[in-house]
Image: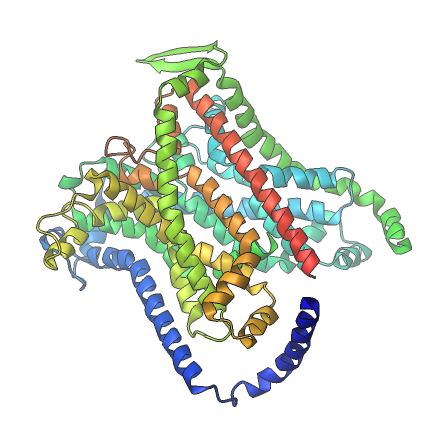
Length: 311
Length: 311
C-alpha cells in the first residue's frame, strides 16, 4: 500500500520536474501562498542582516578605533572614524618594545613556507597512494587517516623536549618542517585526485618518456592547482593564527610571531596602554587575512563545502 | 579484468616510486609527531619538574602522576569548565547554522545575495583567535566601547565588569566560539542538505507539508550522519579550546579559574616545566580524543553505507 503510494508520487514528480523549469516563471502562485512566501523571505533577510551585523560589529569597531586617538577612544563610543590612522600606525611602527612589524614579517615568513611545504609534500604523498599499486598502499592510507584526528597539542611535551634536544629553540624550523606531514591536507588532495586526476594522464606522460618525478612536478601539479590553492590558503591561515605551538618554541623578541605579541600585549598593564595603538596592533594581525579572504572568498567557501561533501 | 591485470604487469617496475614518494611524509611524521607522542607517553610515568631553579628527575614514578592529577581535583573542574563553555557555544551555533543552512538551500525561498552572506558568516573563522579575543577583551573591558554604548543607551547605570563574573567570562568565550564557528558549521550542513534528493522536498510540498514539517521530518533525519560528524568534530575542537580563553583571561582562567580549560592547564604545566604532570594530562587527552575519533569514523562509515543504499 505505502509502497504503491511512494511509487505514484515518484512518477508524478518525474513529470513535474521535467515541466517545472520552463513553467516556473509564468506559473501564478496562489495569492495566499505568495504572501506567506514573501513574508518568510522578508523575515529571512531581516535575520540574515542582523546576523551579519553581529558578525561585522566587532570588526567595524576595530576599524573605527584604529583611526581614533587614545583620548577620543577614552571619551566614548563612536560609529564614525577619526583622523589618527596614520599617527597610530606610526606609533606601532616606532614601538621599540613591541615589535609588531617584525612579528608581521616573521608570521608571513613562517606561514608562507608552511603552506608551501605542506601543500607540495601532501600532494606528493597523495599522488604516491593514488597512482602506485604497491604493497602497503592501503596500510599507508589508513595509517594517515587514523592519525588525522590526533591533535598536535597532546604530543606537545615530547615536541618541546625534542626541540630542546635538537637545539632548535627560537628557530622557525620546528614550526615549518613538521607541516610536511599534514594528514588533513593529504586527505583533501587524495579525494580531489580521485575525482579529477585520471590515471591515463600518468600513462600518457610515461609513454612520452617522462620520468616519474618530472611527471608529478610538471604534469600533475598544474592539473590539481585549484585544490592546491584552496589548501594553501587554509594552511597559511592556520599557521598564521597558530598560538599554541609557537609559544612553546619562540621566546626571543626578534623571532616572535604575531599571536605571541598579542599575548604579550594582553599580559602588559592594560590601563597604561595607548588604546589607539592597541587597536592598530590588533588591526595589523587581523587585516592581512581579511584582505586575502575578501579577494578569494569564493574559492574558500567552496573549499569548505567541498572538503565536507567528500570527507 | 584482463585489462587491469595487463596494466598491473606493465607498471610493476614503477611501484618503488610509491615508496620513494612516501618517504618525506613518513620521515617527518616519525620525527616530529610520532616520536614526541611516544616520549610524551614515556615521560608521563616519570617524576620530572622544576623546583625553584633545580630540575627534579626524571625519575621513574609509575602511575604517581596520574594519581596526583586526579587527587588534585583541578582536572575535573577544568574538564567541567571546558565542557560548559563548549556547550554554551555549541547549542546556539548549531541552531543558527541549521536555520541558515535550511534557508540557503530552500529552493522555494530562492534568497538572493547568499554569496555575500556566506562570505560574511564564514569570515570570523579565519580570524586569528588570539587577536579576536584581544579585540573582545578591549571591547568588553570596563572602560571599553561596549560599556560606553550600554551606558550611553541608558541600559546600565555603571560599567558591567564582564571579566569579573563567571557568567560574563564564560559567556564571552562562548560568544566568540559561536561567532567563529557557526559559519563553518552552516556551510558544512548546507553541503549535506544539498546532497538530499530535492524530489523528497517537492513530494512533501505536494502533500501539503509546512516548511517546519519538511525540516523536522525530512531534512533532520537525513542530516543525522552529518550532524553527528559536526558535533563530534566540534567536541574534539572544544577539548582543544585554548587561544580564546587564554588571551581573554591572560592565562589565568579568571574569575577563580572558572574559565580555565584543559589545554590551558596543560600549557601551564608545560610553561612551568612540570613535565611529569603535563605528560599524564596529555595521555588522558589523547585517549579522550581517540575515543571521540572512533565515533566519527563510525558515523562516517554509517553515513557512507546509507548513501550507497539510497543510490
